[in-house]
Image (cartoon, rainbow, N blue to C red; front, side, top):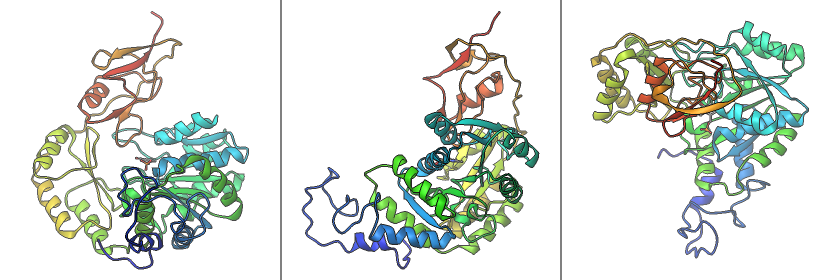
Amino acid sequence: MRRVKNCHILEMLLSQKRPHLSFHTPGHKRAGADITELCYSDNLLSPHGVIARAEEDIAKIVGAHAAFLLTDGSTSGVHAMLLALREAGIIRIAYPKTAHKSVKDACWLFGLTGVEIAAPSLPYPRQPSMEAIREALANADALLLTSPDYYGNFPPLKEAAALCEEQGKPFVIDGAHGAHLHGTPLYAGNFAEMWVDGAHKSLPALTQGAAVFARDELWTKRLKAAVSRCRTTSPSYPVMASVEYAYKYPRNVKIERMAEALKREINAENNADWTKILVPFGTENARAERYLQKKGVWAEFNDGNFLMFYLSPCTKTGELRRLKALLKRLPRGPLTLSSNEEGARGKRTRLVPLKEAEGLVSARECGLFPPCVPLISEGERITKEHIARLSAAANTFGLEGGNILVFEEDA
Ligand SMILES: Cc1ncc(COP(=O)(O)O)c(C=O)c1O
């Protein structure tokens, strides 16, 4: 592990006194770094020691008024931001059709009305246009955008922020995939009132390590109250320490440049995020994935058309060279595209085996996990391609043991 200076939580954990006879949680009793809130280790709900110092430093690094460490992933940050909006009296939130399920779950939990922004979903989920954002925002009181998304694309951030400002509506960003952008012009914090960073995805933090931020004092007050309702009361110290470490970890300009060059050389998608290399294998996708896995190379996901390779400042140049050599060898096929025909919605629903569902209308969002955005939306007619992609996926959401929930339709 690379040494990074002034990591308050990590240094506290490393300087623990020995012996340490544990008569406290966690139950494994091997105190080590996985401790609970003790007199010297501070407290995430009312920080005043090392955690407070870490949060202050992180806020300064990213240019926020306040930062809140999260050990429950970006999900709890998305929930907290939407709860903060709810507590500010906002009920209608515009978000892209392709938003992550945590956004839709938060709306459900907090009684918010989601106003979906139309966004292209082929050949993979894309960012909405400014026109679509404007149209949806006319019927909403706040805007949530994902930036960047899992496929490394950005929404029109500057224009959306200006529109929100003009209409006096808060703008929040799900930056689950953008923590590595702090200090750069595309960072969510340059545009939004509140934003969440999934530090564990694109920075060297442990899984579930994230942070949520507020731009000014008023939103800090609201977010602080909301965060305390959305996160665990037993935070993981290794995870918190790793989030602080991740924000203090230096940028790796060499790997950023290599990644951009690699994308051009292998004809990857021309996205704007160096951490996400999206290779269109089309009908050869599954074979390419299997071949790479045999060689010990694991992609972030296979969405049926693309393999996505996720980098971070910790990716090594030799690793990227090996990936390039392997990718160059592999054949590509045409992309398979499914239609988005809208179906009529009935009242009653039933579960049917996925393989028998062609032509029926889905009564629930479902898709591949990751990227955890809907492949089939509620009300959408299920196609042969949907079934093939869901059947071939290693992990899915929205299905129940090989069955899919569909609407009963009048004969
Ligand atoms: C766009 C987006 N938002 C939020 C999340 C939730 O993040 P986490 O898994 O850290 O809770 C994800 C996870 O993949 C995501 O892709």
